[in-house]
Length: 301
Ligand SMILES: [Zn+2]
Image 1 (cartoon, rainbow, N blue to C red):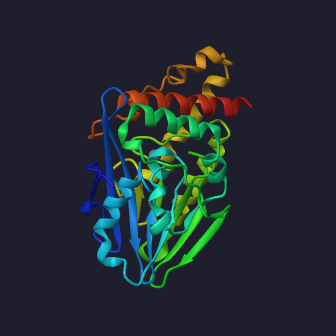
Image 2: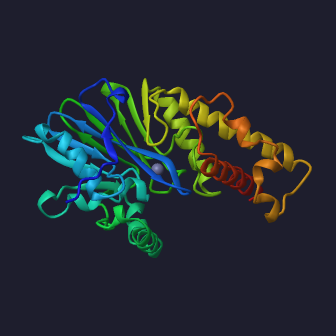
Image 3: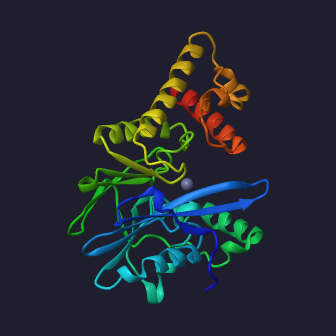
């Protein structure tokens, strides 16, 4: 198997040796400039739990090499946070000789089996060689609301956390006061799936806040601060408030909703003001406009 050079351990993200954080970077000019996604391996008494399989089986190979000395006596379990290409396209690593249970939300099966997913994979494979060995491997164990892994020294509570996607889940490890939020929390801003995802995203973020985590890991954003959960929630509340204000005097047309952030006078610059990290303006500008549009559509419905 060709070894992927785009994956590395990020020790500064976790001082606890039981939680290993890995980062995948992808640089394709004009498309994924500076794209980064994190995955985790949680090592407990009885299990080695791989949270997300990144972009391709080769990515998982790198992660598993790093924890090879921890495998003896531990069952490998795999968890997909959701079925997006940057989180679950390495699942094929866990077939055949490396077969392991793959846990995900039940709706992830629908996504994995969809024509949309097949078309997306075919498109990516045609354009980029790194996706050559990707196969759409659906989960083997699914749940809808909650599933607890009693892993000896640590308890891992998986629960539905929709909003970014219908099949999105999060993980809570109470002994460490650690929340794995994946794409429900993101820096500089979270991405809502559609208008129906708006109330789900609010509920998910409010549930996260109620857990009072000491540390939060998210898939995109290089931070462990629980403050980001509150910042994401405040951002969405701000959009909601400005949409409400506009709707008092104006009902926007579908054309106006194309650039919805301008409509409510909430430019990306204002959202990311004070951010010290460079921001992918193309991607987050699009995501911000989409968030405002979905909020407006939800309020109008
Ligand atoms: Zn993602």
